[in-house]
Length: 194
Image (cartoon, rainbow, N blue to C red; front, side, top):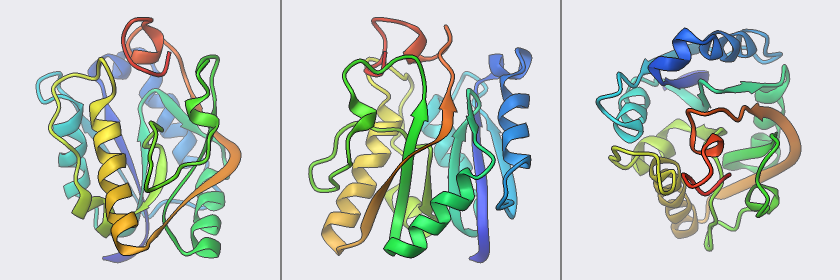
């Protein structure tokens, strides 16, 4: 693996038409810590989110990767803050809070206990070898829960718990999750992050 971070985007085709992908990519290019590579993989609406993320993951050859869905944006110092936190805490997985007008159950405001995980997002900085070993489950749908997110996070958590690796929550808001009609958060009745 070469040094640096790969920004890893998974793209729903509709978000290419409505400008979401452009907005997400712009936030990547404005990082104070520039990624060594940017990989964007189109879902094609045939594979499902799990297979798309696994395909994207297989293309990464840097020491670290940072997930970003095409309906999210990073603050300009998102990568820098997460990388600093990873180094200071010797962590293989670092995630932060986001800005969004939902989450009434408070899932995303809690610290993450790697041996008793709860649902959180995959917008995180992850050591690539850990992510590739964990892998992303093969899912065709994103509901009733985001299976590819939850499956990936629980797999990483299990590895960390088993091997004594650190997963760290940075209690700052460093990115934005946009609510819209094409994700589970934008559809009451679909997803667990309404």
